[in-house]
Length: 234
Image (cartoon, rainbow, N blue to C red; front, side, top):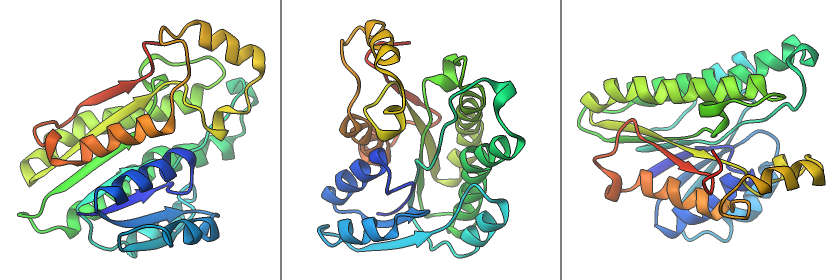
């Protein structure tokens, strides 16, 4: 299977690349600004890879990116960013770029890949959303809204794509040890950890494992499903 991964240079992205490469899949890896890091990484991979770049938070760049997409049988949407602060303090440009990156890019890329494929060819999509998309969070209103919209897309598009020999599912990680979560204070981390029954934060490898499962044949009858990976947090 040939699989497109957006946000492949991030923590969850890199773990997913390694896991899917170990399964023998050909990979098309997207990054915005870390092409050199990906180039170094793919030298160690035992599979055919292609690196594509683009700012998916900008609508014009997104359209150009979609126009140049190769045909694939799988798509993992990981690309994303966060904003920690009150909604009243977030700029209009920040809100628009987050909505484009998390939501519009998912929709546009899925639309492009579906239109490219022959009807008999399968297409499996996995969206990396968040538990905040299910439960919300003060201080991350726009991020939570974007993640909720992703889940709405998964639930809705699964009903269309299923009739076209395709499927789309999602994972909703909780607090995972990534650089994006490293911005929180020790106090915030301790408060969150106290609420997690598992007694620890999640690992990127655990998210990558769930993505690999949803991409593979073992989950062939799953469509519109959401796998929560949060240690019982929410």
